[in-house]
Length: 410
Image: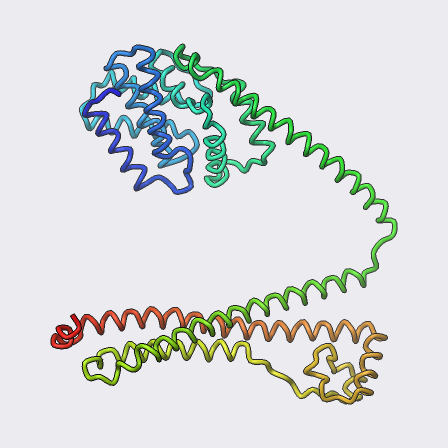
C-alpha cells in the first residue's frame, strides 16, 4: 500500500469521524467497510499498475467515499465529497488532485458510471465483496442496515430478488477485478438466484394453501356466528389477560421479596455484628439506610400481594336485584349452598345478569391489578433509589472516616 503522510492523516480523520459521529444504525457502511474498500482499491490499483500518485488519489477517495453516512444515507456521495474537499484543502492538497478525488467519490454513486481508470478502480473496490466467498454475510449486514436505518423494510423474498438483480446487472470495470472476482461473483449470483426461486416457490405454495383455507372459511360464513359467542370470547380473552398480568405482578413481588431477604440475611450475618465496635460507628448510617430500603421493599411487596377477601355473603334480595356478583369466591364463601345455587341458576337464565356479573368481575379485577402495579412501581422505585443512596452513603462514610480508623483498617 502506498505510504504517505496524507493517507495516514486521512485514515485517522475518518476513524475519528466515524467513532464520534456515525449513527449506531449504520451497520454496513462503517469504518470496517471503509478499510476493506481501501485495501481492495490498493490491490486493484496495484494490479492495474497505477502510478503512486494515481494510487494515492484512489486511496484518498476510498477513505472518504462513505463519510457522508455521518450526515445522511440518501445521496451520501454529496456530503462525502464535501468532507474530502474540506480535509484536503486544509492539508494544502493540490487542487487538480482534489478534483480527481471528488470525481472518484462521485463515480461510486449507484448506478456506477466511471469515466477513467482511477474511477473504475474505486468502483470495483467498493463492490469487491460481490466476488468473494464472504458475500452472503456482507449482504445480510447490508440488509440489517437498510431495515434499522430506515431506508426500507425488505421481506426475505424482496431482498433475495433485489440482490440477485443487482449482481446480475453488475460488471467489474478493470481487467484485474474481472479476472479475480468475476467467477466467484457468478457463483454468488447463482446461489442467490437459487435461494430466491426456492423461497418464491415455497411462498407460492403457502399462498395457494391459504387460498384454499380462505375459500373454506368463506363457505362457513353462510352460518354466521352468534353475537353471544363474540362477547364470550371477549370476556374470556380479557379475563385471561388480567390473570396473566396478576401472575406477572406476583412474580415481580416475589423477586423483590427474595432479593431483599438475601440482602437482609447478608447484612444481619456479616455487617450488624461489627457495628458495636466504636471504630465501625461510621458504618451505622449507611447500614441503616441499606436495611430500611430492604425492609420497605419487603413490606411493599407483601402489601401488593396480600389477599383481600370480602364479606362473602349476599342475600336473596341482592340476587333478585342483580346486585350480587357470584363469579368471585370472596362474594359467596359464607352463603348457604341453597342461596348460592339459587343465585347461579338465576344468573345462568338471565343474560343481562350474567354479563353484568362478568363485567363487574372484570372491573374489580382491574382495580386490584391497578393497586398491585401501583404498589409494585412505588416499591421498585424505593428499592432502586435506596440501593443508590446506600452505595453513596457507604462511599461517603469510607471517604470521611477518621484517620485513626482508616489506619487501623488499612
